[in-house]
Length: 261
Image (cartoon, rainbow, N blue to C red; front, side):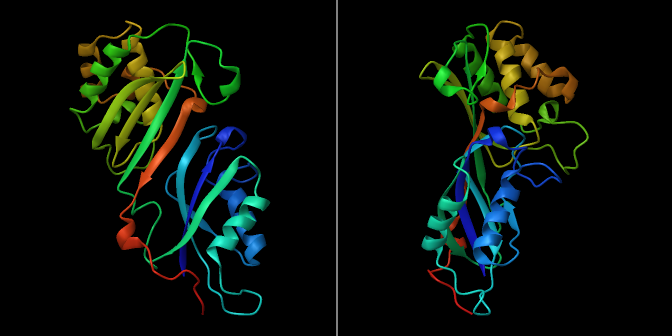
């Protein structure tokens, strides 16, 4: 009996989403809380693997639970949501828990993901750990022209972390643009999938365009070279947010509010 968890987290205190031996991660923290409350070993699968220090304002995971004895009673999603929010540290928030079909998958059923990267050339004391400081004023119009060039391509090998086990570096972008918001410049990018470190390296390269260090033709050359060493530096993790994960919920959900054995 499978459930989706809708949550958000501030990644500052975690070594990413995925469990790593001896290190604090969001997955481990959530698994320990669920296992304690449900009095059963619970393993969860996330919709992605955010790196150390990266945040998520929209994140999904799934877990399986079988109510079979008095010790493992039927699960009440609303009550479990309340208990988890009381049990978890304050940098993790559970929005909802809901039943889904037995073959629903938090990672593989996602149809699109959206990330945002926040930068500013000012000290923002109330946003510490939530943006990356830069020391120049970028040309946002030029960076938006560069972002539109990205949309013309689908092979992002030049922005992928080296030596990762992926079958393809093809990503289909459907959105890429810069906006100004509360003293920050925010880069938004949406795609059906992303490569490891892709958003942070794309952001660093576009900022090179915005500071006049890289031309638009130079950006094209970087993409077409398919060489990570040709692209700009990877930006620090604290400015990166996973902001939206999309699913065909109409085909994933079940109508059961409480599942019994």
